[in-house]
Length: 451
Image (cartoon, helix red, strand yellow):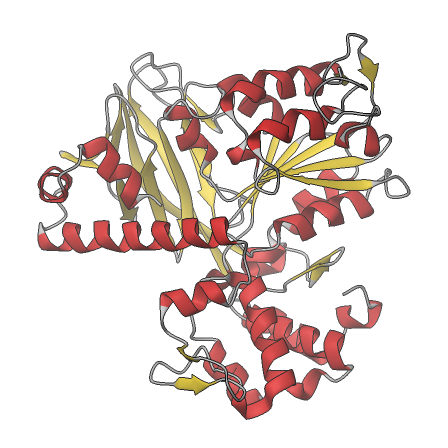
């Protein structure tokens, strides 16, 4: 998807027009605590959610010793300020109520540790202040949610900073990582992807750093690792949240020193590699839970980009569907306007990947293809194929064409999230009672709720 004509067509202009006219903005003013008088602005134009805590990695950094290192996160979603507790020690409070997640409209009082904020609604940032771009490299989207990312992406592409790209499965994290590489000074050098979920945990070290002859049974010859393959270019460590804890210090040393030691070797090898990382996990919560090292997180998250899910990218579904149609057939009209209109209201659990699969099926099968936007449809597959309810969450996950382990994990996560929401609704939002009904500790219930 690198046709330059795609940047200026009527579809793109229409998508930019649909994207919206303004981005909401909120101001957090410290009214009590060691940092009284400070104010922090959070807008929908921010490229990722902003962390609150005393860690150097936090955007809203507090000197309050009773605040956790990564205490909470705030972001503007749907015009409201979304507040999420990150498993803090002393809790996050709105007024006199302890919350694990809340959506604020302005006027509320938020307490973290001994620090108290008042939430003020600011004048919105107008969309006219954002570039009228419809893509960054081969990452496409003209929605406000995407356009607010492009200025940051432009700057990061020209640097050698480590970047963490976050987002749900199928949002295009690898595509954006490659765009950062192709739009930067390392574009002529290799772009190499190492997927932590595609390699057995016992083999990750040898694959990343390489190994010497005789290092283990079967190592008949020496072999360079992914760091060496990426020499002069960019190494994307995909799904870094799955990296075993015992290997994280070795990765940290390799990134800090730009040196690797092959398995079975003793001599450090110097490498010139830019490291990008991608994850669908909430690394802030993984750090809090002790499953991801704080020092490694701090080293790789010099900059962070959070790709929005497709359901939050207003106007991008027709744009992307037409681009996929043109890519597959040369004709962007292969999917009807009527169908695209219905697809705009579908939540797309599999994000851009699911949309692309839906377009490909529609082109290949025509009216025989299942329509994910039809809640009642039991769509008939080609002769001999299964009948699938397109609203069935299992069907939505099957449509992603994931490996078994990842598909199973996604299905379990979806069940646990819905189960937690169901119990919360039964118990009027009381987490303590909901956790007791589930028969799990409150901390574990919070993890289920946050999936």
